[in-house]
Image (cartoon, rainbow, N blue to C red):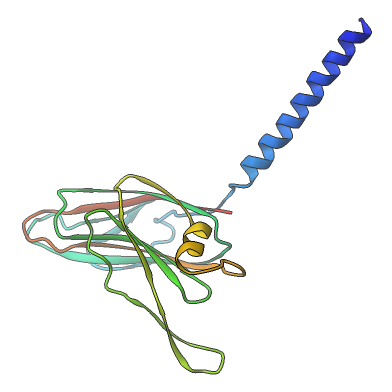
Length: 195
């Protein structure tokens, strides 16, 4: 083999190794640290709310019936990206939101387009000197009914301040049908948090 050819092959091999290392570094940055399997984590409040596999859904089965429910999961995760898929059918006077609560009592509500905002305005808690404090919630409304991807650090920094030493302590979802004229079928699936 000619010496020039060995140099070219060595250079190509080195370039391939560098590209391979860069690929694994970028893909490992978005490792899934929590994946919502609603069937196993089925902590529900509400009559018409149900879990099946990776799907949380509310279906009153009848336009004249109304109902709502909340799902909650306690976690302890560093904030990263979050994604989920939500959809609905025959929508009227409905409520569909996902809430992320942080270790410093701040929370962000992601509210579906066309949905009513959640009832909660924030959280009361006791500080280190046992004084009662109030932390208002942030509501980001108008999120389309489809696959959603959000950066929790970016949203937290924009609406709550620096995201240093903050952890995600719970994730909640609210689904509600308040219409007596339409049968609202609401679904959330594929909930994932990346680290």
